[in-house]
Length: 72
Image 1: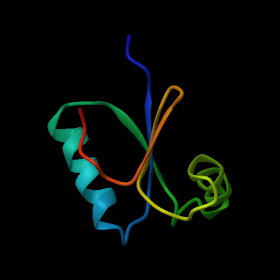
Image 2: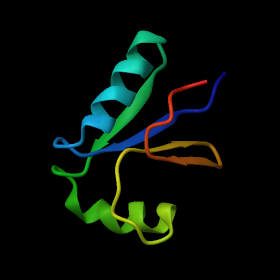
Image 3: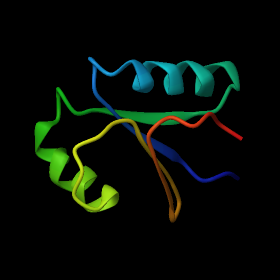
Image 4: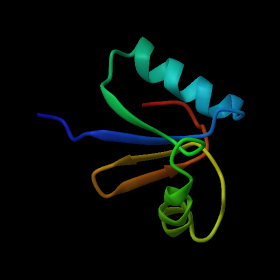
């Protein structure tokens, strides 16, 4: 079983949209956390990014990818 992908997104971020579309196209399951609806989680994102307020942030197990670079 593969690890759960957690995707932190922001609704005004076109890179968040692009990454979501790519995950859907690849039929990969992911849990989306919309930071507009969960602003208290910006603190968690800042921990993951080394202090930056940036989206998207994709977390798979211990792997953290900041920004959109394409999947795979």
